[in-house]
Image (cartoon, rainbow, N blue to C red; front, top):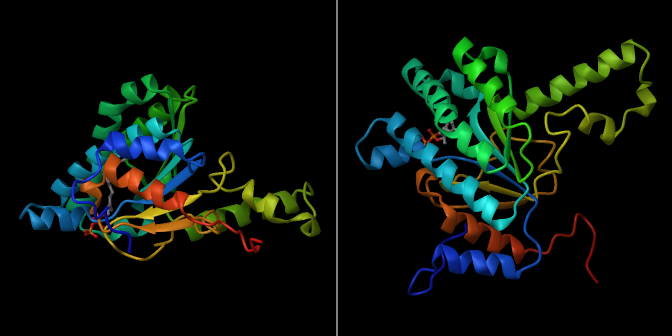
Length: 257
Ligand code: FPP
């Protein structure tokens, strides 16, 4: 598991950012499984929603960190399909937080050139949450600096089922022959059709699972497990992950000679 730098004095954000920039290769697309909000709250003898609220602040720090480092796409797993099974009080706290996040952040995200897209089974959102999501996507649609993908009510297998159904519709309508279905045809029917696959997948809080996130898209992503709980994940942890990525030898199944 990756651990923070063992230097006697921790590197500052600006030192780390300078080191990230020295290296030519910054990941174009970073995906993050934000985990550990509940444990962060428990360590403080606070209810779980307190951890989620602090997690929302970490989202801001990481968005800014990506803008500063020159990352083009950031995909955040904010709420899984399985998360609907959490206690009703926690689900409703998370949904309220989503609305609050949008109300607080929309103008800033737009001003910073961030284009937000929200992907998942959005039919399950309440009317006000769905309306907030739609207006966030509309308000930020001209952003060109960073594409921020928020995955809400999302599951990777469900995304693949959706793509299969879309393919079946095209085959049934005579627009596509079964023998013409290849990777490109599946890829084009994923939520993420417009972005490159993630180069780097980060999971916080030390858990070593994919948890049904972007199953197709992370086929060749570099994995980085951080012990940091999500609410504590800021620029320092982000740049540390990118520096680790920059040491990797990405072979995509080939050999290096
Ligand atoms: C996982 O921690 C985190 C979530 C289920 C929610 C993630 C939500 C946020 C970061 C805040 C809202 C963000 C936006 C963009 C509105 P956990 O609860 O599973 O933690 P645990 O494993 O320690 O219990």
